[in-house]
Image (cartoon, rainbow, N blue to C red; front, top):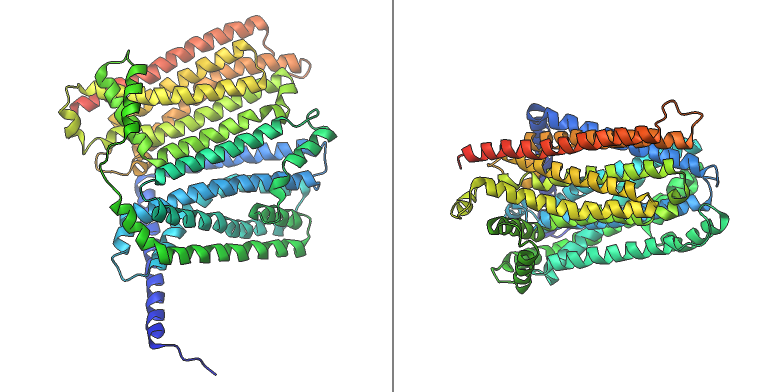
Length: 582
């Protein structure tokens, strides 16, 4: 017995199928064309991305592998504490995916030219949402895979998990990422409808609330009683992490399912996989329904809310900035203020900045509870340099992504700056001061926090403070100078400018600069402290007098290299900028 469909539904069903096929074909053609263009014109960029990704993955893998081997000396890896740690890890990634996917979906739905075009076509609203949602999930989930896969592989090798464990991780991953992505999309569409003029305020308050929660959790872990890795301490940690074991958290289903598959408990693994996948489907269905009913209305409200109203907060920011930096020339202050306003008006910039540096600060605050403070001076020195290196690498990513494209973005609007009584080199110096100011404030705070948590010697703290200042000035000079020497005046998207040849070359030079400075200062300290900790087994030992000599030499060489990395790119950029025709 067949049920006859209404004629309207019979007409709409083939149209919906054709729309879905057309959008899938468009996505495939875009991916094919982008891949072909990258292979033909950006082989250096692909090689750099692949190399950095492999190095990052291997670094995390060996870090997690060493951590599991270290923990196995104290507790059984099938113990409850491992499930707590996994649940906390996936809960953190859940929150990160919620924020990142929400921001990407909001930009894709309400500030994308493709969305504007698709809304004028006969395509239904939910099909447009599905098309943009798939792109947002692809952009946000690769980072989750890059962070989660080395953890799960390292754990699987440590406990000798079966082969099916590694295949199940991919299935769990695909189901897990749909849940925060769908919830983030729902929040993005609701914010566009309810707060069309206050979306940045809502985002700022959300990030502030997340940072407060992270600070509170870190403070609770820091107050855990007992000595590190003792039974009392482990019990206190489990009590404070009990919230991540709530049966309604998707991270709980993810961790429990993966641990069950590692133990060859396929029944429980399948049970948690069904729970996770069914909730993923339910969350996406809810997001599609919300998009069907509210997307067009929210798009109209967002586009209609744009105005040129003046804000009193900006006037207060202007006056405060001029008072604090009175020693700078007035034109330079105006240029820095312009770039600062542009930075604050773009949620994609300051939200990523806060998330990355906020996570680093959260980790540094919890260093005492990881046991490094009671380790030998050798381990404290090693961890301090690793923390400094991570901070410098994130800073290089920030300067390559946001500072390098600054001058290219001025290309089409340069006639406005040309009307001001400014020389062209003043524009470059203004961007250099903007980059160096933001970099110094954020990184110096993180490095001092890390060293204080590690209980480092005041002289080592002073050395690290000087190192990060050298790196900030050098990275800012490289990004501003190469941005003027290798501009892309035809592109208005800063992410595409940063991903081009100039941005890739800038990132490569920045990485070489960081490696040279950090290595020159870290090797003498390492040889000295390894001799103090393992005098019998160390092959090379540096005495205190030798440490002073080589540190003095390394500091002089680093200062000279920093001066060259700051001045030479800026001089090259100034000469190219002065000859440039707009």
